[in-house]
Length: 347
Image (cartoon, rainbow, N blue to C red; front, top):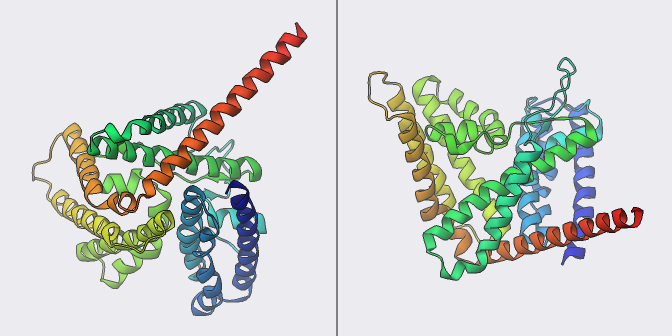
């Protein structure tokens, strides 16, 4: 399976490179608007299919996020003459910016490093994730809600590490800056803070210009337009999560992810309406944070995780995670033994 997915990785990388070369060429020759969008349609249709080339869950889901979400929305922005992509960019930089949460380095900023995780923070998160994976061997004896708490922490830590690692590699190879990814979501004061300013920030970075702002403009602006833009962004996020869940489970969408994000969109609009009344009471910051996280987790237990756990996809994720942890442990042991052997030989 690993060999097959390595071959798939090479094939997918080649297909993406060719697709982005075509998009870059088309955007150079066609003006923004309908002509560009029509020219992009073959690529927009192919990108969501490419992750299905992988057999394992992790590469299928990760490539699905990069190709079917980030790249798709960035290409839609390019078709409108907006967004971070510029057809004058060299092809490697064009591909990297289209797929990953990175941006061109600002030459006026010296020693820019972006917002990636510090090495110590990454090591701590990796250790915590490995500890969580090791606990799964006892999952049959766990309280179901305790297991879902572990799943929640697993999702957070895995997303943090995967996005930071991918962006850091691109930065090291191509000298680009990292886009913001996560900003301590466990400190969120409310849902708008959680989803809009702290959780997986590469998503709102593309949803705002692609969905929120156009819908707000169509609705005429003002409070009603802002609410419509927020609701539309959450609904689109829900639909995209249905696609991400399909990559994980290979089962048809259930609508639960869409319901989860529609509910959170409605709650975010209600929060904004309440916040607009300055004299109305507000809970203290620690209480507001606890309530916000409790709402995210409770609704996640109800609507977010069942489409994954019901078909047993969580078992495949756990098995793959255990294999990765074992590989890293064995590789670390081999490296330590090699270093000890070299030091002993010198002495």
